[in-house]
Length: 192
Image (tube, rainbow, N blue to C red; front, side, top):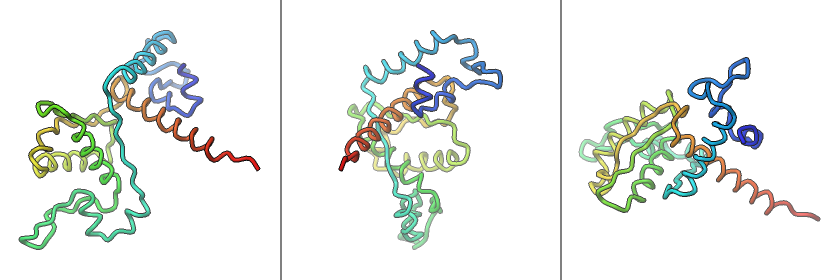
């Protein structure tokens, strides 16, 4: 199963990275092929039997970059003070990532049906984008409407190695993209 996922374009090497001798590295270094298969099947089971709801966002980078700098600041989390007629912070006007990040936060919070629950976020380790994302998130918890703010739980960035939830999300995203690509290819595969 591991080899089939890797051949299909899935980044199995990130799940089960190997060293220069072909041996799996930590935390999977002691796993045999049966344990790997069982783990992948458990991830599939979690995806298919839970109430996990995938969320995502797409940002047209060209359109984002065509916006004015003040628009891009606002779209990436900057706050403007009408009273003082100035920006209180800068946002991240050159990184469209944060526009998609914001959409995912709002979409996830909107899916929380029980007002006593919170949605927490766990992202793969990202040393470049994580610092502002963490700052943005903390500010969102303060500035968002109270109904939305109280639904926002914790946020972490950590390596996906050994974190089943992140690996299940990666697998689900891969399956969704693969399915969409196949549908597109079959829909556009016209014969003359």
